[in-house]
Length: 245
Image 1 (cartoon, one colour):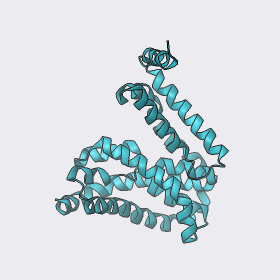
Image 2 (spheres, helix red, strand yellow):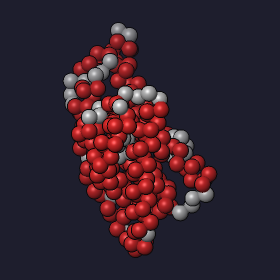
Image 3 (cartoon, one colour):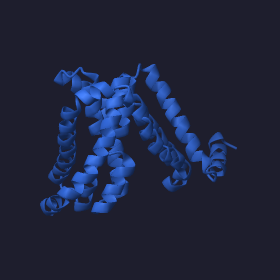
Image 4 (cartoon, one colour):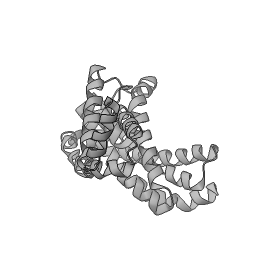
């Protein structure tokens, strides 16, 4: 029997186990992280981007439905909540500086959150996106579970929002270094907070690769931006609906 046929038979057998999705997810990320480390953690060698591409290719080649894969991968999804809460630990070490920067950070949060929401909808409108797509774009800079909840509540498409959130996070993690260099931003706290507002968890993971301070401020920004967006989107929803119709 050809090797490809044998692999297909083994995959069909293994795909009946929910643990397969969990196993391939962990292996894909571990392999992607190894490649990223070999590349000295270059922004373009983002482990999330590599792992997502590898998983999509695997599911396509094996003809595995996403629902079947997610039966196992949902265990990783469940850990997003505890992982987000755990970000408070490195943030505690930055408490003194956090107090000193409280007002500028709150101002940056409000402006950044509003800009992320309105700019996404404006660009989508410019390219002729449908109303449902535009509403799905509004929470794209918020961590996935909250963004999907916001999208569903305002009439967007949660599945589309999830894709946009991941794409936003990867884009931010890959490009942030070059944007900071262009703007001359060197402070790790400022860098971390900015990427946390714009690129949620994926950006935060990248920030921790730079320094603990950048990661701590990014984690803070990610959590606060989720709260801010959840408040701002319903507030601006009537305006958005009138504008996009």
